[in-house]
Length: 306
Image 1 (cartoon, rainbow, N blue to C red):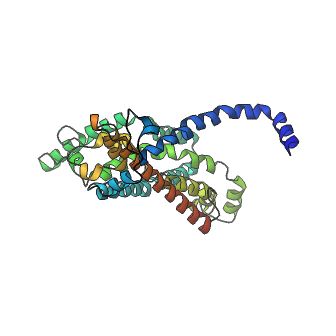
Image 2: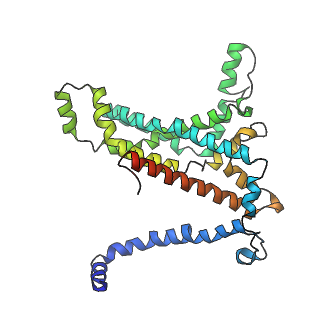
Image 3: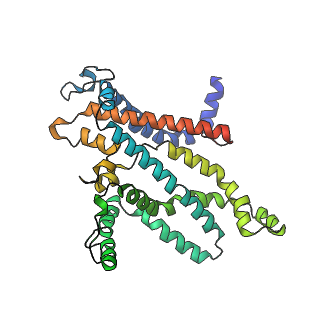
């Protein structure tokens, strides 16, 4: 057995050599930091360090579950996450299918370029654009509303009910083009012979989309959905934090922003153990969601991560 492995390694030693850097990267930046998770079960003290701080068990988790903000934060996180999934996930699929139908190559490339560009706009710039567009006095929203009604409208960015819609749909606009790349790539592998045979049988272009193109990318769609559900509790921190204000806080406070405020933005009262416990709870929920959705996918269809 050892001789077989030695022979195999000696034969492909160049490939294993190339494998060393990514393995080291994963070990150093992904696995080694996991040692710090134990802070969630301790009363962390900067002087004593991670190893010298006293154990407190599940005290930090109980503290979070009993916090008066817990229900509101959890509700905001889950509702925003599922709203974002339901709104943003179908768009790249539909766009890729529509793009695949285009026969004019130059026009197709122009459309792709235009829809990919928003993805490369930084979050800070995007939030700045949102503030400029929805400003009740100087923005496009305020100007149009003033021209129609004769008076300045209410500030949407200060409205808790409007916050989820602005957050989600601005994200859809920014990312649907870029997220469609993987589906466009999958559609490029569909055999032209299938379309030719269907066309001879009298199938319209729309029927070919539903019966050839969509089934061809369905496994890819399933995998992407499983991966997306695995991060359903992990909303983007930067965008939400930059869009937050004291008036929309009841709808915009989520786990990621709460962790930041408790762990890093509290000054001398930073509670690293508490914020780590909240982050660990978030990760465990994500893991459970990933496992459940993967199991459902494996049972219902033939596609799953494992």
